[in-house]
Image (cartoon, rainbow, N blue to C red):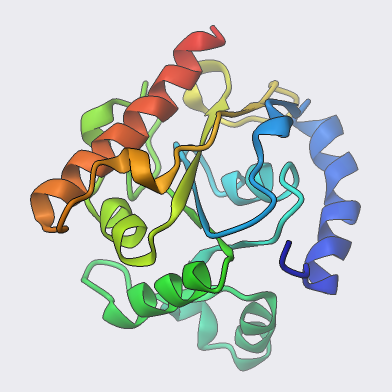
Length: 204
């Protein structure tokens, strides 16, 4: 298992009791975490708290995306870089961010991504998935860990219970890639997000 950044581990220890108390956070399927090798951590997206719902319930360090504007304030930008955050330019194809992501995965790391691409407050649907997650899985030959973040009315609120459901990993070999291309990326993304949606239904 790749070494976890000390600051990342400190935040896990510091924030876990807060989220356990104020969001009544619980986790199902913690035993499904992959402890070795590259893995895309894929989840539905409800709120800005989703990063913590994932990071606090998995042992390995997850590299997340942050919009480029957050890096402009140099002290905070330096902190984000030290934390391993990947800068991304929203609203357009960011080749640099894609390259960084693939590099993290090829080095055996975890990368957190929301296949929907944006937050939604309704029942997620398989067709919501964007092809980018399929592209990254193909280029890095990465496994996928599907996670469903569940709460009432799909809206995160203080003292409203949040359940983090970790599904069984999807091995790269099961994503159906042969030679890549947009059709295969889209099909893989749909497969991944279908599994995420199924996790929500399995624990109603």
